[in-house]
Length: 337
Picture 1 (tube, rainbow, N blue to C red):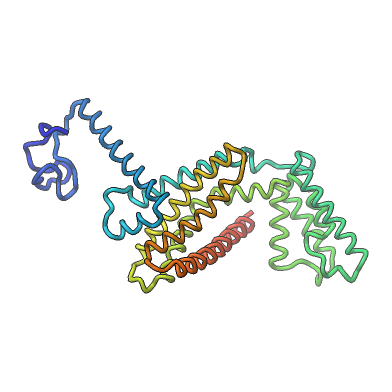
Picture 2: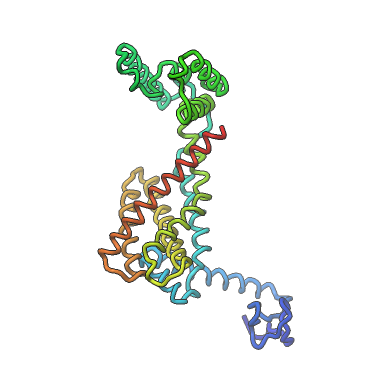
């Protein structure tokens, strides 16, 4: 911008403070004339775009190819040359889940599949047939009845077959069957809860019940990240508590690492989709582990052996925690059907 657009009045139009030079030291607004020419607006637009693009590309480049460098620079106070970690994470995660929706199966996950609708359903029906056969063999050998699981029950599978599209009737039939057997053999507590919930979901979606649950889970993963990220940072804080870093420092590492995972996922999922393979996702999984170890070593300045050990501890603990959270979420879905 040329100097002739600067206001002679040194009072900031935004906050009313005195502006010593070009920018207000209090709010940062440039002290220029409010009525600008069109050419000036166009110039301002391109200046902002090219400035942001250069920061974005530098940030992406360093995230992908220099493990831990951005975190180390950020903690050292060198932040102006890179996109803010949270802003970069939000944008990258948005693109990642957009790509995930693009490469995923394009079908209605809530469509009710009755037996014989498609190949998947026929396979599902065959699996129920095998359960029936196992249950009948158990009936012929009374000594084995105690070992027959809930799904190895001919009455249960009969309800599965005959109540697709009628979830309420499925639950009523289950309750009726339970009422006809001795009290000591009736399902109780957790077993009863899962049986009724599964029958309701199966009655509602048929053999598509798995896809429906997966779709519900996938739509809520972005929200779950607000639990996963703080948990990951907490694990780092526990492992590196002697490094003199505060929780927010570990959170920055966490955000940078997960942004890298999203970037890697975007590239690998698209390549797998376009080239009809799964190799790129497998390679990306291995690369993410190597990247994590290198990033830990660079940021926390420990030996390769210690970094490997702590990376394994974080990976195992984090994976188990995610699994427990997902199981809890699925249970909550079943509890409110």
